[in-house]
Image 1 (spheres, protein in one colour):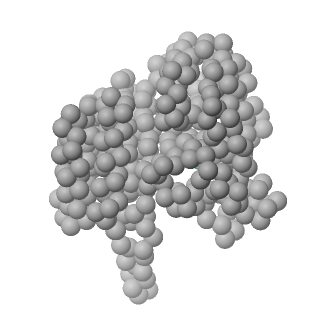
Image 2 (cartoon, helix red, strand yellow):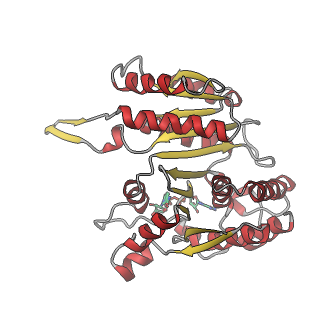
Length: 331
Ligand code: NAI
């Protein structure tokens, strides 16, 4: 039995969390949930959307499943998501993008894993006003962060039976910064002779992704390119409703869907729990509960490919509860 922190979030978060924990329980996952609320409601009650108890719970349990939380607008609080990544040093953003049978997209057989560096690059937030008409932003690339993210990508490839890791850069223009990223990637690649190592420029990658996405496997990218390319790939497989993600550090991981708290459909029993469920499946693989993960994956794929009980965003008319029960029936 593994204890996992569950952050049910707000907006549609609690509804999709209930759906996912129900499915995991019925599938036989060996998990005890340590439920920790965070987000807008918690800000009202506790004066902080991400209280210390949530961080302490994740530090203790090392693994968390997180539903979306609303970022309060107009308060001094930074996003809970950014705060979690920084506080726990979750340096790798993992975004598997795989076609699901039954969801119509322009391509079939997309099965790409994006590994995005999460801590530096232009997102380090080092900006300076030079004068009224000029702002300078620093693109920070370090050997330490580049080496550990590429190593993460190769280790992921080995653990998950992947064949190729492609390092993405714009080293033809950003010769020093992206040049250092590539130098680190080449060094790390030497330690993984069984995994093929490739390089590609980010503009060329974008063109090829919208022409032949099937040919890409694991991609490793600095922060900014990773942010943009991961959303492009989410679009390739059908968009937000099925886009999963995870933020992973040395010994701690937070699994979460890409979408937000969807306040427009909150409490209406309409939300699609698939992205959170896919995040939970990835979490089960991470904690080595592979069999349960594959069982749920199969039931989910069956439900979607049959296409009779789907939520509205997937073109159906089922409620969150009906869709959840159908997946449980297909386990
Ligand atoms: P959003 O992703 O919440 O919603 C965009 C649109 O997609 C809405 O029409 C919504 O109804 C729909 N949608 C999203 N998820 C859905 C689901 N599972 N099933 C069915 N429909 C779904 O993005 P928005 O409106 O920009 O953000 C709302 C709040 O969420 C903001 O406070 C934002 O800061 C927060 N947010 C939180 C994230 C996180 O916790 N990881 C990530 C992104 C946004």
